[in-house]
Amino acid sequence: MGDKEIKSQRKIKRQSLKGVYRQNRRLKDKIKKVSEKVEIGKFDTTALTEKEKALKIPEPRFAPFREVKSFGEGRLDGWVNMLFLGDNLQALRCLLKEPSIAGKVSLVYIDPPFGTNQEFKSGVSRTVSKSRGDETAYQDKIVGKEYIEFLRKRLMLLKEILSDKGSIYVHIDWKMCHYVKVLMDEIFGQENFINNITRIKCNPKSFKRKAYGNMTDAILFYSKTDNYIWNDPREEFTEEQIQTLFPKVDKRGRRYTTLPLHAPGETLNGPTGKPWRGRLPPKGSHWQNPPEELDKLDAQGLIEWSPTGNPRRIYYADEARKKGKKRQDIWEFKDPPYPSYPTEKNLEMLKVIVEASSNPDDIVLDCFVGSGTTLVAAEELGRRWIGIDNSKIAVDVVQKRLLAIKRLSAFKLYKEV
Image 1 (cartoon, rainbow, N blue to C red):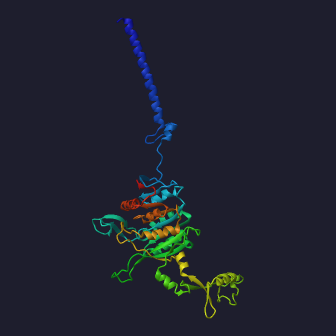
Image 2 (image 1 turned 90 degrees about the horizontal axis):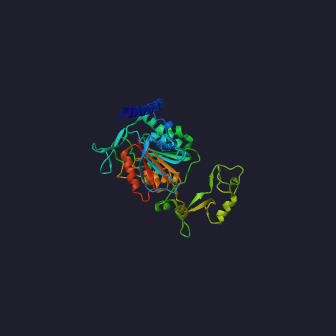
Image 3 (image 1 turned 90 degrees about the vertical axis):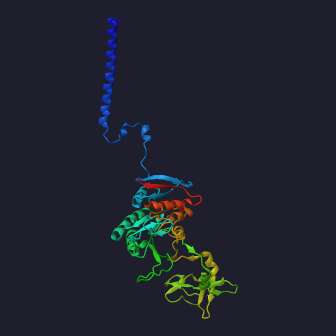
């Protein structure tokens, strides 16, 4: 190879190296500019293309809860029921951020810890147990003023989550009932207190302590406003009740009783305060119907006159059977003798509550869900539901009970991270 050829090749090589150096310098300058723009530990979205932005993973719907699993069949309205494993205070705060839930829940039922300072375990025999070897189902260790504050925080959130037609039932024992009543008067307003329901929970006891036997607990029933859902629950008359309440029998063999035609309170100017058939209503009262309507009842044979001329309305037992007996504020719904979880409540009792204070497709919420009786009642009665508990044992029991329901509507399990 000649000198000229060697010099030519060296020149080409030098030019090539210069090109590489220039490319490296431009790349270094570009890297320097980007590094000055992006702080360490931060994600710079300005460097993303529009396509990359669209692919960015959205924040979880109920952070700090993450979806774990889905169950059941989808509903026609697209709603998916929810079961949360974690702190109910955190879960309620998440739900209040959800427009489809906040202010739209029709019914809240809760059976919170009773401030007993006890630890509840669940044995392999499916009965409530206190054996050392059994796994802890939940702890009821918050007592005194800390317990009241614990409950206050949750009740305040529950009030916000209720719709204006919503109601809340708080199941509590005889020791804490009066303290919780004062707390609920404060949060929901004394004017929205509806009932203090006495629930017979077990058979009579024969404990040796110096006191009367305790066989009841309480359910405090409040509404959010005076325009709350009420479906007037009824119960069937027993044959014994029919014979006692309707002791008379007419010529056709129909059982009946008689009721007063007057009601308390005088009417000064209206027709119900005027004489009918020559007699005025008793002092301090008024006729329940205007005189012309009383004439119609008498013509239909629905008024019975006593030998002294006192009129009373006839009320037949078969009419009462069709209407049912109005449910009173003393309920006998005993706890299951072999519960699947400590404090499991009577399913029929929860169905009464769900039917009385919600309508089909309404949202029912229980943030101390325990064995899941509220959710089972809501599911079987065609309501939407949300359940929350911080016990893994409880949530496992809930899933098992729900999955035993035929044609179970869809629900998602969320777990606190």
